[in-house]
Image (cartoon, rainbow, N blue to C red; front, side):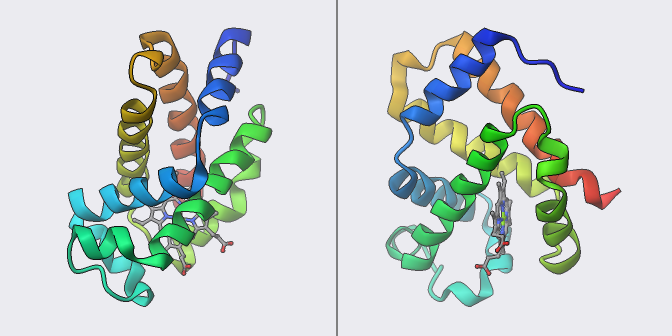
Length: 147
Ligand code: HEG
């Protein structure tokens, strides 16, 4: 069972409070698809993902970015039980979407880069430490149904 210190909860809340889901979601997913091009294979129904300009301008990418961030918000609202909260999402990614679970960490890394570019010096080492712990728990919960 993961334990959260009050400062960690506050730090994670503070990061979320600054997130504009629309632009952060779009940029995070764009980075994932550009930096790790094999991830495009899961989004065959999204139309043109040919290069970074096309990906950035793709409305389906933008919409899915918001979906992913709302998924993370579910974890934020259930920080003491992320595993159960994510049980069906994990099953979906494993059994239906067949997403290689290594990609969860990559998406988390892209999100962290986007947050760092937005928050700049406000993204202190302590805030980052709490944030990365949160992402680690999210990734582990998403991997659960792969076992
Ligand atoms: Mg996933 C659907 C969340 C990583 C590929 N993803 C979804 C959905 C959510 C979600 C909430 C909608 C589920 C539903 O319709 O019930 N995804 C989510 C999170 C994370 C993640 C929180 C990681 C932090 N997803 C992820 C990665 C890939 C991926 C790394 C592929 C590289 N997700 C994926 C695809 C769909 C979803 C292909 C279906 C998209 C669609 O058809 O609209």
